Length: 111
Length: 117
Image (cartoon, rainbow over all chains, first blue to last red; front, side, top):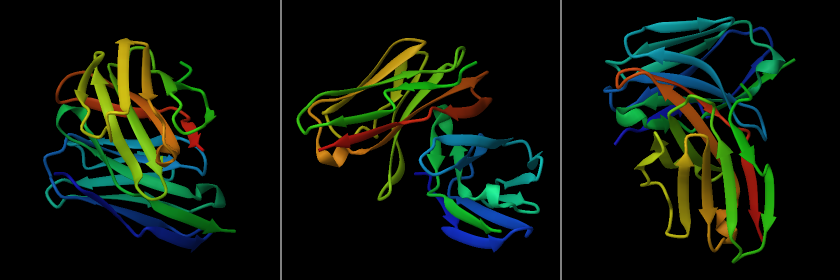
């Protein structure tokens, strides 16, 4: 059974710092991997989708990488801002389009 | 597109009552997912559909829970009878697949916050 782990569970950094969020998965037979952001009391917002044939995807200050063989993905956030404070979740997509979610990393960016 | 639409946004009910949650996926999407989120258990997949057909309902906690998708633009999640431990935020999400090897982004609705007293 696919298991997705996100470390750390919580992270607090000063504004302007570059940071990396980690996501690991146990079964490398995945199709895609998706990163989401969730603000308190809100739904999940899609940030980036990396297809299994890709190594990375970039959107603005966000860069996500994927290493299927090692079962890892990272989300790099450059020049963090207080508005980046949220919970970040990763999900791997397996057979039959089934999504497996990690428990998330709660990020706090201090002004 | 308006995105995934869920109703109601908030529901407060008493134990034993029937609750029906509704979802309208993004037009053209062929997958629809129902999730439940709590502080204790995080995000749990309850059931998902492909072209209106249930693919995997192994996450449905009990027979009190049922889900239907009568057409491509509407799905319901029903709890009967409801219990206090069903209190959670229920999310609906949808995605489009252009083929077995090309599963695309999943988009979430705003959720329904259910409180069972």
